[in-house]
Image 1 (spheres, rainbow, N blue to C red):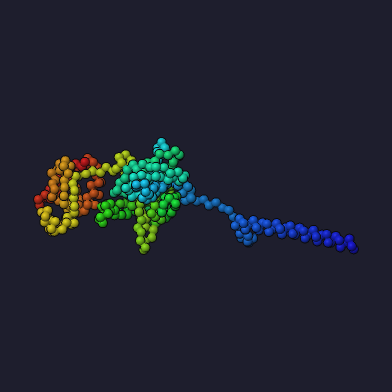
Image 2 (image 1 turned 180 degrees about the vertical axis):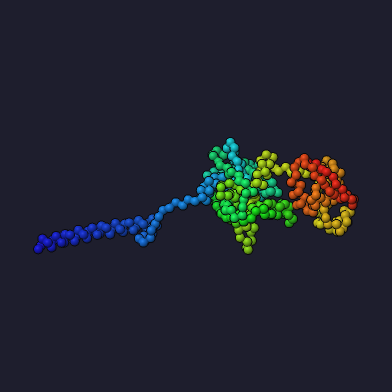
Length: 363
């Protein structure tokens, strides 16, 4: 009997020791889970999954072609924006951005996705299309976008915008949305006088475009560059109104900026002002019928210019270019700039009350 009791006591002591060891191990495991931030609820299942989708692959493919641009004047930072690499040749990287990103800048730097930053050369700018080209020498492999065909864009197509909204701190930010509209017209006031000087054809998107995104790429789901993010409508009652310049219209301008440093546009050699902007006293002073509102008054004709060679004089009134009636400076520029240097254009104008026509070769 004593032997049996002793056996039972030894078994109980052994069992108690085993339970103590297991309890200690459970506590240790629990402490480890708490320290690593894992949920200790045994009823909650956990899985570790790496999410990959077409969009994440697209972002990974595109991010090295997007840059941040900082512009300086008098060694002071005057602004930041974004840019898209469109060509790489012999370690020279060519970048598209907006003119307003580098306007009045004396120097600019470009920060790449790999963390490197290099000084850039401002190759050329164009106020009317709000485009600029920068060039950077690098010592690493850079990747350029493939330019898409913006004429194939459709409303409802999903696109992403990339760039540095609010500055370099948010470099490489991605937003997505739809193409909301095509062939939208946005008025541009280049001299800040409150009068529209130019109309831009733009793609409308509800992808978030914020200050700092200017000059960055709008990318389709094939990873192609289809637009340059340029502007947005900002108002309390407005949401998701961003605009990009279509790449089909961007690239011809970029080519001229790269080759010439500017866009070569034809000239007539005249300074003009709309008649509707003149007061009755001014019209009387210039000898114009005070009731006449149509046409553009020719204030000055440059010597040896196409207009001067055609016999057009100061005080004449421009009425038409070819068959298009011209009432505003914007209409004048937009029609004239559809032509090339060397093209002929028919000018209809009024000289001392008589309507005349002259064919002019543009220079």
